[in-house]
Image 1 (cartoon, rainbow, N blue to C red):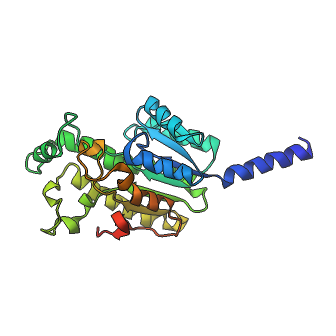
Image 2 (tube, rainbow, N blue to C red):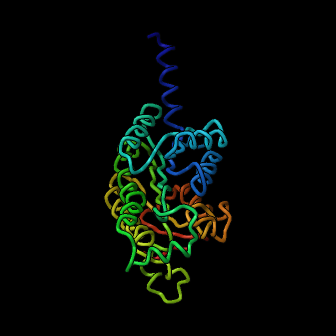
Image 3 (tube, rainbow, N blue to C red):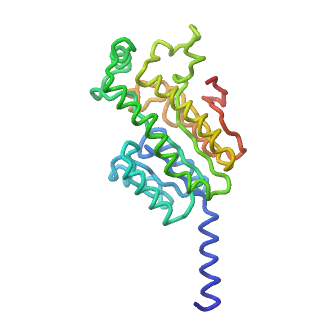
Length: 265
């Protein structure tokens, strides 16, 4: 290879390494889509993770040239491994991982929040439904983080953001004045508590590698997660997750909610 070809090759590698790369799970709709959109507006290349690749492609086409659709079902290890290989081959690193994919129940679609809360009361909740929700909200997050640690280690300021919920705070739920405590259950609510514990565990484990890990709660946003009964628009609800995703200050092991409020675990 001639000298100018070698120089050109090295320059291309350097330019690739300078690009900030993010993966957002469940990014084809809702809060995940808004996070991906904001990251692209801030010069990230974003891998749009979606269980259904066609949905991911449709979302990526709306987001523009810096969005790349990738099939990623957090409950299926092969899709996680395939997504890892795709990002590794194209960039060799991952600056930001946003674990946004989540479900609130595994029952009949279109049920109201009230119906879901009633059926998921701890005394009667289906163990099968509980396992299904935890498979996505907890074990899926662990699987994705574990898989992408090698690429996160290759980034200078790597960050992991887990999209949680104020519903997962044990401290808040033990306060009789907390307005959402009636809905704390062993299915969704406790899965977010477990996700918070996972966040703390990874924050401790990865601190020696300078990988920051935080949890964030959107506001009560109108999305498919709550049958679109939330009080805030998806743009409003995504504000705090977007802020945390873009934060390169070095904070780790923190749980925040709307208006940058620090939530108790």
